[in-house]
Image (cartoon, rainbow, N blue to C red; front, side, top):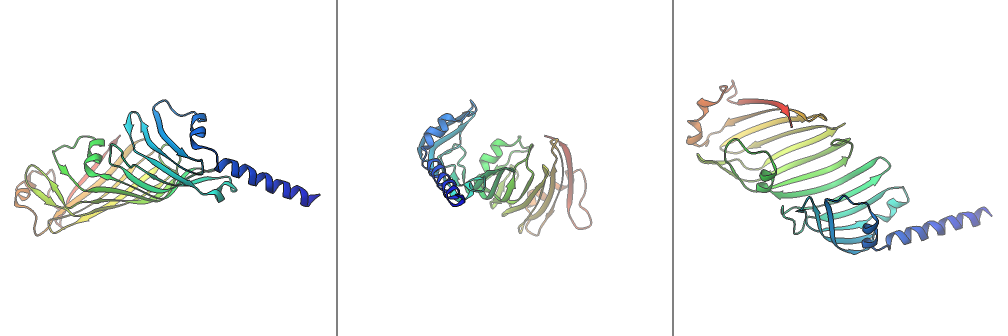
Length: 254
């Protein structure tokens, strides 16, 4: 009797799982209570493996999305999928990685997303001086677990792959800018640095759950620092310290 019951439960589990993974994705999306500002078009494939030609949020096109679910995770009470996104987006966004949902909430692993620096500037608050920023900004989240308002935990990095920043005075060779980020209980910490023959710099920033932030930064002119910038250093609010670094501190609320 016990053997028959276990066999029945196993077969039932196989049947339910099979039904889920072969269910048309279009049918599932039609049943979901999607937000009014979210639009999903061109859906193909199944719940297990499929794609959407375009994802739009607030009339902003974020491009195509494709997914392949990890069937084994269904038996642990989790939904997990390898995704690719961004192809054809208005932001020239590209990304891939693993995302999932478990009893602990939404999570991601080895999630990589990149977009042009000029797109990042367009989304950010206006800069105090006109700058021409080029290159690619890449976010790499090795691990991420969501909790309101930002994250329960996170570990990753941000890399700005560039060479030159163009300003009204002169071009400044900066090279790649690399920052490590971490998060615990929605307290986000970022620490980064940059180094080139013209200038070196570093920064530390903290964003709190109440949207208050604090940041400190420094830069140090190097041997090939442009003459046009040297003439402007005297106008900075504080002189260089004993190591030749110009220090800055900021705090406020987003």
